[in-house]
Length: 130
Image (cartoon, rainbow, N blue to C red; front, side):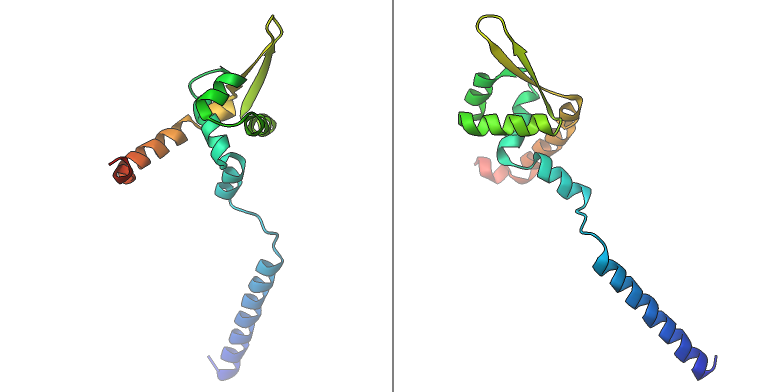
């Protein structure tokens, strides 16, 4: 290969890498699926409520008592979880009127995730129990 050929190849390679950098710079910022997931379920209260609902359907006051969340926070979290499709809300209009919350299939699908977190915590956070 002549020096002219080498020079042309290097120029082409530099142009290609410059194009790659330009493409990366103009690509939209799209978080990875892990970040998207954490944004949907990652708040402390969302995780606590989801974990509690893995035990089955519960009324608002039962969730409030079991999670130690204040009413305003719990209401907001349940609305968020309902909006994102993790929780269903059922209103029973018998006297007294009662609102029940349960996990959707999407919410139920998190059960193995909670099991894995629990296993990890028992292995790596054992020193916290001492």
